[in-house]
Length: 350
Image 1 (spheres, rainbow, N blue to C red):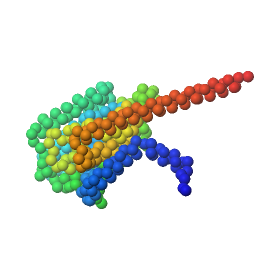
Image 2: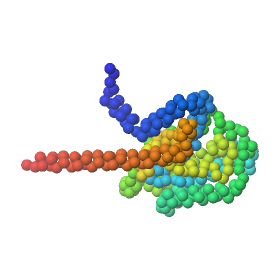
Image 3: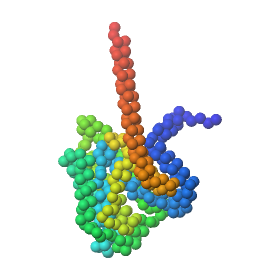
Image 4: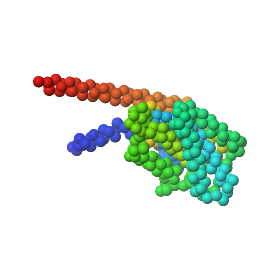
């Protein structure tokens, strides 16, 4: 019988204890059960394609939300940023029909960056709570979009074919939008996990006062967190226009709460300093899979909402339990160290 070495057992133990593993297993089980009941859910070209395409935009917003939440803040304006950039992208193609696609894409993302900069300045410089600021900018950005668009909307006929093809194109059967979301996820995960600037965001979210004493630029990290969030929401807005090809002033409504839910379910602690963007992305995949799977299983809309609510509450409770256990372990370790120090001090006396 083959046995695992202690090092490998420790590695597997770490993997199995991670929240991301549990969320990934939940997605796999949900897809498997739904496919057994309705084989068209995940089998075949369309089923597999939709399984990956549907969560792509929410993955980008969840990653954006995860960056901000890690710094112990929140960005409720991501859906309004998505909607405004999506409509702006469509209008640029309408008003400038000869504009290069790459230029319009960059301008759309740049608009998202500018809106994220507004949030970052208000939160980090004015030192106003992010919940209040981003709730205000959510309505402000959405109101600006409604005032601009009115009752009009951008239609597929107004967009160049090369741009709308981006929303449906695949590479070896995998949607391009999903590949873009995965590339963004890998880049952000690398920065947060292996770059000093990213690790400092965790330090800021864990204890901002201690971070200041350590010499970290807390306001700067919070500012760039919101800039990154706006940039990713802007990218999501551009891709929204490419995928749906019809954009109105209500584009993206309600996605801000789904992005927060995805991040929290994926293990990004709402109190900051804990979690990964991989977990946030998996949370987005789980939520969109639930939205598609439960109607297929014959479960009503009320229970769909109830399941999501239960997942959010369960994730928050789990975070609190884990935090309490870690605090008890730290207190026990400190007490043990103090006891050993006293014993050693007494033993050293002549």
